[in-house]
Image 1: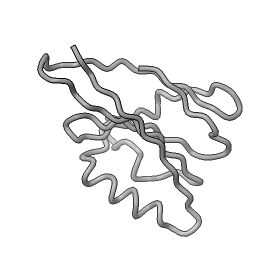
Image 2 (image 1 turned 45 degrees about the vertical axis):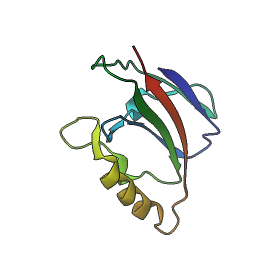
Image 3 (image 1 turned 180 degrees about the vertical axis):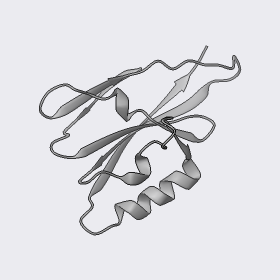
Image 4 (image 1 turned 90 degrees about the vertical axis):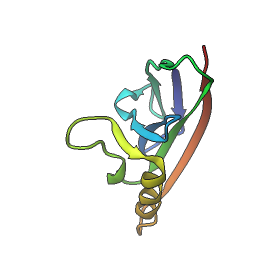
Length: 112
């Protein structure tokens, strides 16, 4: 999968993958500068189970300051945990004074 995030400006950008099992993975390390105002990304993703199609989300989160809740764990893994637990914590952090957060979401499906 490849893509780009435009209109970056001075904001912090975090790239997330929300998998079909509800787990959220940080893909931020895959972001590369593509100019003064954009970033590109690329990563491999494959269908493990040959069953039905699998919906996935890619979420780009832009913020005025770094969001601690979106930093991978100390173990170095990219998993941020379950979406139903992560996104409420992200919303609480986004509501902090002086913090400005926006997000863009794209849906895709993995198919055989």
